[in-house]
Amino acid sequence: MKASISNKYTVRAYPAYNAHKQQGMTLIELMIGSLIGIFLLIGVYNIYISGKKTMTYQKERSNLQNEAQFAFSFIAEKLQQASDFGCSNISGKLTSSSLVNTESKTFRPWRGIEGWEASSTGIGTPITLNEKASVLTVSTQSNNNYQLSSNWTTSTQEVAALDTSVKSVRNSDILKIWYTDTNVGKITATSGDDITLSTVDVKKGDIVVLNDCETIIMAQVCACDADDLTTPCSGTDTHINISNTCSGLSPGNKAANLNKLNLSTAEARKLKQAIFYVSKQSSNANNAPNLYWKELNQDASSGTAKPLLENVENIQFLYGEDTDNDASPNYYVSADAVTHWNDIVSLKINLLLRSYQKILSTETAVMFNGVSLTPPSGDHYMRYSFSTTIALRNQLLAK
Image (cartoon, rainbow, N blue to C red; front, side, top):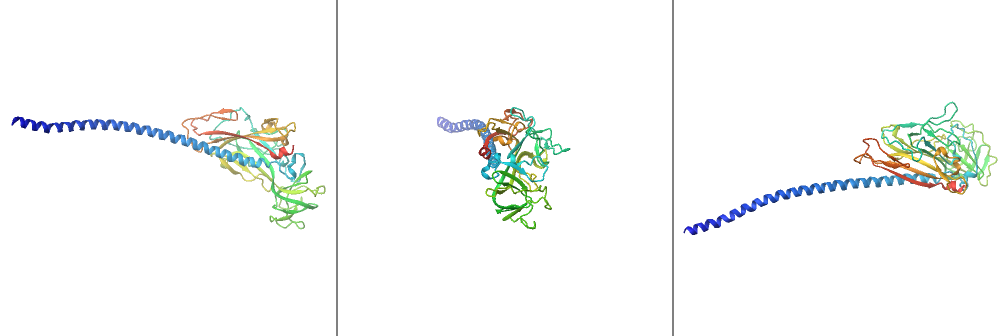
């Protein structure tokens, strides 16, 4: 009987002890599993953060590459038209003159291309990276002596001043390109300052280029009527008047003499212009730097600034000059070292872009203009330098 009772209790006690033992092991295992899970989560989180940063960097770099490609393509399109004044684009071999009554020393379309070099920014010269960099206002005529601000130099061939509306960030270059519209009016007759031609799209104040394959003449449209100078230009005009006594015209024309135009080859095209430079919206130093461009106004001055690309900190131009007339550049120089602008056959462009946001953990140097540039303390923008070389098609044809 006792043995039976003992066996009974023994049988009941064993499962209870075993369950208690199993429960203890489960708690330990849960604690260990939780720790392992936490470590795994931390690892996964770090991988996620690292991957996200990598993706952000790659996306930002891809965006900058696409934007640089867009800017180069846009500038290249204008450069391909540089010196296109008609007649097989042989502007370098033509005699040029201007009837436009302007005193601006930068109104020199016959050059086709011209640049201004920011002082002390040659290849290998460090350019200060400063998020709050000030905006430079270029000086204009003073005491009949055209000179640039001390921050600008140009070809020793002739010192000139840019329009007061061109306000570039310091240490960044400026490029100007001249060309003509694709709409061509074939000149059939001239009488004094009246020109009869095939249909052409011009307006009063437009600058036109008259080209007979021997001479190019720049003049400002006074009216689109051969008689009373009152008919407004409608876009489908067959007359152009370039009178030097036209009312309400600025800057107006000098007296014209078109008797020597060869009518068998003469044509008229509207003059166009593109200026490229880096500036800040409203010239406010606190704004991000952008690449801007300007077209030609109807008074022969530069027009309203148009933003082309955001977050461009600097642009540098080098000009390939052909000195032996073999249609190949002998060397590349900055604007202030160009000997003859009509000998420029190619252009090197260096573009410095930065990210829209501060995505780096520390200041990171970047190679630009042949030298390493170090951002100021606290500047965590990503920057990339992009370069391209573009041949000037019409300058080459002129060779």
